[in-house]
Length: 490
Image (cartoon, rainbow, N blue to C red; front, side, top):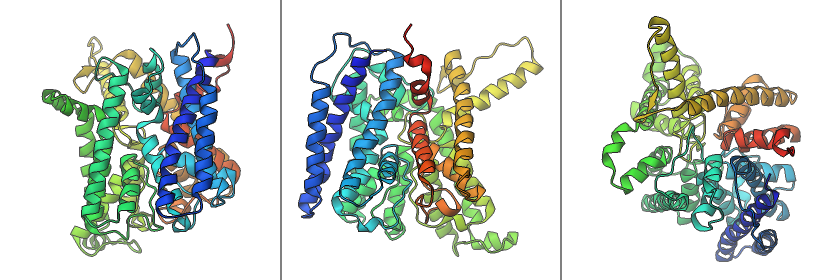
C-alpha cells in the first residue's frame, strides 16, 4: 500500500472541500447571516490542513487499483466528516451523528434527511446542503482529476469512483475525459437554473433545486420538497432528472459529433422504455377512473388523467433516477403503483450518470446472461457472446457484475438485520435500507416522502451512512478498504 500517496491525495481533497466551503460563505455575506464567520473559519482551516498533508508529493506516486479503491473510500468518509462541521458548529444539527448523516446523504446524492424543519436553516447552510449534491453527483475525485492532475495512474481512481459495470476513457487522456464530463455537467446544470428562473422559481431556490436535480440528490429548500412550485417548474425538473440519469458518455458522443454511435446506446433506450412503462402503470394506478373500475378503496388518487400523468411522471423519474424530490406522498397510493415505485428503486438510472441504484446496464446484463444460459440448454454446442451498447462484454465485466449482486444482497441483508433492532415495522426498515443503499432518499411508511430518518437510533444512522457511501461507490471500494488483505504486508 502506497500510504504516502493516499495521504497526499486526501490532503488535496480536504483543500478542495475548503475551497468549495467559501462559496456558501459568500452566500451568507449576500444574505447578511451570522453563520458566515464559522463557515469561513472552517474553510480556511480545511485549506491549511489539506495544504499541510499535500505539501510534498511522494517520490513514488503510483496509484494501483488497490490504492485507487482505498483513496476513493477514504475520500468519501473524510469529505462527509469535514462537510458536516458547519452544521454541527453552528448548532443547527447539534448531534455529530446527525450532521455526518445529513452531509453523507448530500455528497452521496441520497437526499435522506434527519431535519424536521428545513426552512429554519439560514441560506448559507441551505446552499451548502444542496451544493454537496452537485459536488458528489459527478464525484469530487473526478473534479480533482479534471483540474488538479496528480498521477499517471488516475484511471484507477476514476474507475473506483464512477458508478457502473465499467468505465472507459472517451478521449486519450484521463484528465481530458474528466474535464469533458465536468464541462457537460456544468452546462446542463446552468441551463436547468435558467429554465427554472424563467418558469418563475426564485433565483436562490433555482440554484439549490438544480444542484439536487443535477446530482440526482433531492435536497430542497422547502419542507414540502417541490410540491409548492408551479406545474411548469415540476415539468422542467422532471425532464432534468431524466436527463441527468442518462449515461454521460452519450452526451460526450454528441459533443464529439459521433452521432452514429448513438444508435448503440442500448442502456439509454432501455432506461427510457422502463421509465415510460412504469409511468403508465403508476398513472393508471393513481387515476380516479381506473381506481374506481378496479374497486380499490382508501388510496389517494387524482381526478384527471392529465394530473395523474404529470404527478406520476415526476415521481417515477424522481425515484428511478434516485433523486428523491416529491410533489405528493406516494406512500398513500394504492399497492400496485407503490410496488412499481419500489421496483424502480432497485433498477436505478444508467451507468455513468449521476443517478444511483443498481443501474439499467446491470439488469440488462443479468437478463442477457439468463437468456444465454437458457439457450445453452436448448443448444448445448452453441457459443454466444453477450453484447451491450454495440460491444462484446468481456468475462471480467460479467464476473464483476455478478459478484456485485452478491455483495449487494449481503450488505442489504446485514443492514436490514442491524436496523431491525430499532423496532420499526418491516416496510419502514426494508425501504429505509433500499432508499439509502440505492441513494434514493425517501422510502415508505415512516421514511416516506413526508417523513424522515430522525426516529432511528445512532447505530442505525451509522449503518445508513455506511450504506449511502458504499452504495454511491458501488460497494467494492468500501469492501476492499475493510479487507485485512488490503493492509497486510507481503
